[in-house]
Length: 99
Image (cartoon, rainbow, N blue to C red; front, side, top):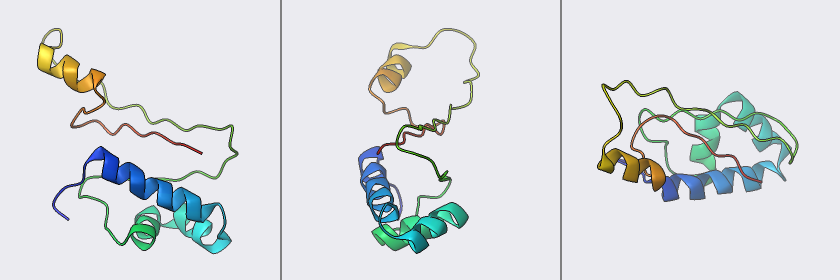
């Protein structure tokens, strides 16, 4: 797959989480080999450069990965602010978990 937008990735993650809630063997695969679990649940490989890690936890536990601090020489421009505000920032590694 050449590229995947956030919506497609989120739909795939929902499939993984839903299956992991009812299939103990698949849940273990998520913990041991997240990329294989994603592929098994969706039929699609993760895009190159996208990492995925699952952590076993309860419904009240959220794990949020913070993106790296951008290196720049001043305040963000209008386009950069629009990307961040719209949730469409093209790099960084933000991760959202859901139950």
